Image (cartoon, rainbow, N blue to C red):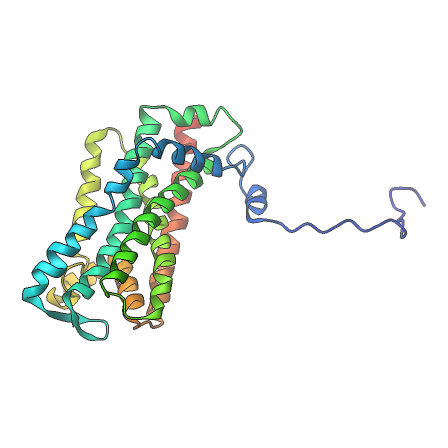
Length: 286
């Protein structure tokens, strides 16, 4: 019996190491595309944001102003509106929608404007790819930072809602994780869209997509005000699913339909990250 086929029963067994998510991804993604160091991009974004902290904080106030002007201003005239569990105060109807919009805006504009500038003008990613990092590291790192920024906006707005008594259920504890999922989904899709943009003029298309979502995804009035065919269109939009999920969690009327909203955003995350990483790899490595 040779040494290659013999087994030493007295030798100690090798310890079994637990495979982390990063290790598994390293085994799936081709070498050169992912180095397992996406956190370095997050650290860089944090250091840059500390120098321009005012621009980061200012994004929190937009939904707050809408809440005061429409939720409480116009709410004095509207009083109640049909919500998940029946008639509810207008401010309590609008607040969860603004929470979802806050997560969307914080993620989308960070993912599109900043990524495009780093890619097209600052040439940040050319320098990044000169290191062991790959396109998947870039996509995951930038999406994570957008997630953090959207989460900060959402956490601040949830605190405001709690202070004004606009949260009426313990289910609201899941509102912040839900906001993080929404922010990640919009960030992933925003990054994928940014890789197709040719100049700053294309960002008019971002506004053209975000503004109708904000105005017509049942943010300020219920779905029943639309004609039947338009209700179907609205129900397919991503912000509608985010708003419905937030309203269910903050009011306590949570059903199995909430899992549909979660699955919707999970698909957005996967599709956005895959498209963004492939596009970055094609644009930066060829």
